[in-house]
Image (cartoon, rainbow, N blue to C red; front, top):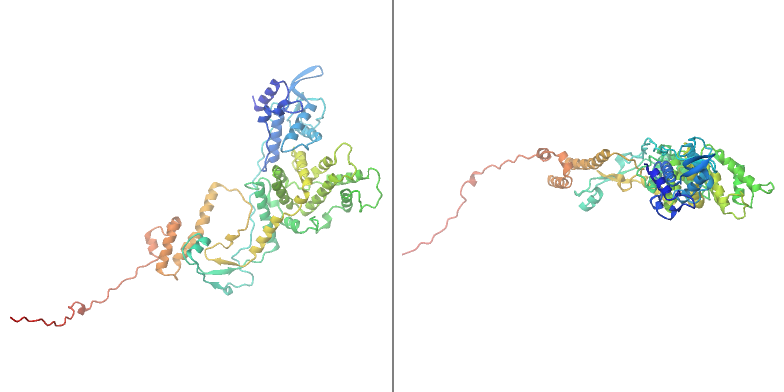
Length: 563
């Protein structure tokens, strides 16, 4: 018996009532404790994970009973209206969707369940979206309807080239660059080079080539993606975005080409919204003041204006957040319980959009928010609240998948609601990111002092977004990356003819003590080390003949003793 069948059997045992609907007792404990859904965090295939979770919860919580239809009894089935009641409450209490899910959205999801064979009618028919909120009977098929996780090819890391420190500035000769010998004590040397060996070799001034606009744009792209990866808490962005599709020019234009209100300004005016749509949006956003409309208004005028705006955005072939960035924005939805992280992630993600899309999104969401809070505006619908109407009318033109993901509408509604509540923050340029990038650009344009054997950029490395590698590749990079500079430093000490033999032996001994493996590669035997210190032939001084004779002894008068 599968896990879903066991759960349904338990539900039937306790009286044929399940997890959903106001008359289902499991909300007060028992089975609810074991089926409490958790928040699906950011990461790859989030939409698929949510789809599978909802199906599992729905199959386990939907009560199955005997029903009669046309003088015939059917076991283990349910009415369409009962399914709507159950799934609607399940979605409303789920952290990933929330209470703003409407009954109409629930019916649309059940239509997709029927199309994807999550459910079937009592005669085994499925594949069409003809599900209605009525008394028709449905049942679960015996096979599992869960979707497999797609295998996306790894996008790989796009290598971003930065200007080389070692390339001299155009028109500058290295012969005219001042060179100065600098003496440092062991402690200072250790801080800079992680090895205490004494004095520092000569240093020189190194110029970068002047950064081009393309260089600056690539720096913006690299640091923006790096920050997005950190906020999302992912090891790699590979599974949620193809970084090759991120246009660095768009990021820079979105950051700098803005008006006083922070709205993006376009260089190509043909990509902007038509004037009549802008006038209609301003009219509803500033109601009852319609300065751009000269024609007289009439009863129901505001509804006709609203329908005009909905029709315009509804005919777009691609959503404003684009198909390419669908997975990124779906991943951000996993952060909504962490307000500051979610806002920052959406700020950065919206910077990646084409400028015309970002401008339209800013104007549309601002209008939606103002309409929702405008008490002077007459109701735009008799049956739906204004805020819910805004979400239903524009969610699909803001976010949807090219592959028609089954939870598109619910995910889009969740995101649009959050956008409306925080649009001023989300659709502004993140100040901390902008200042850090500008500081980095200034840094890389400065003249640097480079010491032999030192990495000039060590104090301020150029950031890049991470790319997952294998364990073997990591070990190789770790060994090679640390040993090559040390081997170069050891070779410089060994070949330096300006220091005395005594000082050279002292430094080599200190190096051997600190890095024995690197030292052993360069000097595997004592003989290889002895080559650096050739023995000088010692000639004995000539032997003097007078040195063999006894030294001159003066005459000593002796006393005579007389008897």
